[in-house]
Image (cartoon, rainbow, N blue to C red; front, side):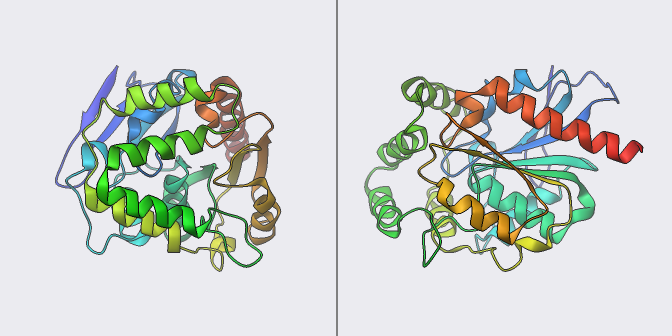
Length: 274
């Protein structure tokens, strides 16, 4: 079963509404240019243990008409945090992971745990910081003005690059994402700006909630060369690197990713019970 909640704020979808109170609330946030459809094939791997809620980021999917001004990580975090179930585990993929980290910094009392998937406190490359090349982000911004569909297609290709199942990964995400409303052009543009400029490195060490950082070794957008740097900034976090995954491990390796996420949440419950 699936329930849809709408109000003056954001649309949320809860998957698996069997009223089983023993299930852990898990909230999934998607990445740039995507929507919650990206998780459609992953959610079935989670539902035995979790009550899964998906929330489209403002400006995307079913929340395409919600555009905060200014469009910032802080504004996105504020809007998302208002819709979170109590003491949930919040999992953010890529740009969604940046928003999730901001929520964990600002309102830790809302969370039982934080999971970032192929995410980082700063996406763009800089001095002694591996990341997305500035000229690549500039190219995407220029292409976005001409043809956003083609831009998204190229971005999908880069996300799957390196995965042995890259073609199928792209097809899976594309099929599910296109079932949702198209994103607002403003959100696409401002979202790219966030990827290019947002920097949480100075404050990411403040995250106090238990954290799991999950990466793909073949990821070109969040390169493994930067993982040690992130560990230095946030040493309290657990880190797992999937050796054969790229930027979307929950698509290429859904069972392995689900097992890691479930194990993390189970440990949280054990700690709270003891």
